[in-house]
Length: 115
Length: 114
Image (cartoon, rainbow over all chains, first blue to last red; front, top):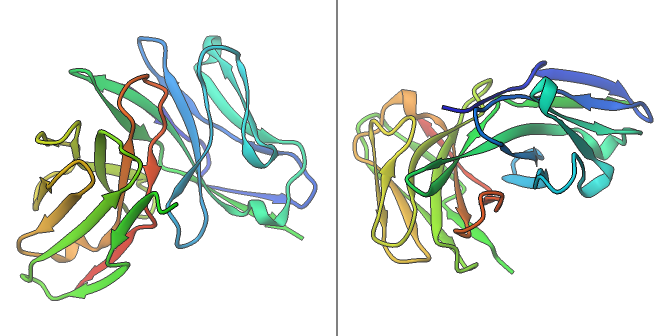
């Protein structure tokens, strides 16, 4: 079975600083990877997804992620943090079972942005 | 432009009571999912439905049942609620097809079992 590991359950950055949220995956086949964001009292929203067309994936709100097969990683970055980026972020991988795709989520990283 | 709608948004139950959480999507998606979210554990799949008329167990199905009423609606039932089922429940849907199709989520149902 596939899995994802998010290192760091809490990350704090200053406003304007680089955001780096880590995700490593475990997969024996080419993975289909996603990053989602969850704001307080809301559901998850898609930030970006890896489609295998390019290793650097751009998402919404200035976020991007780089797929590195050699490191089995799909880390999320943003050059300059904004207060509105404070949220919880989830990495996920999709897995096929009899032709149906299920998603395996990481345990999440809560991002705090300091003024 | 509703997307995925979950009702109710909040609920408090006593141990042993039953309840059905409702989910409906208006995106003509084939697949629907129920998750629970607990602190530090991410989202765990309870049940899913690949298409109308089919349901399958996920990672944590014990204590729950589901019904795929039609293509739009997928309900989750707790027959005899237990305090361990206190959680935030999310419904999601997805268009079948390419493996990189994303899931779309509702805003959740916050359930407390006393």
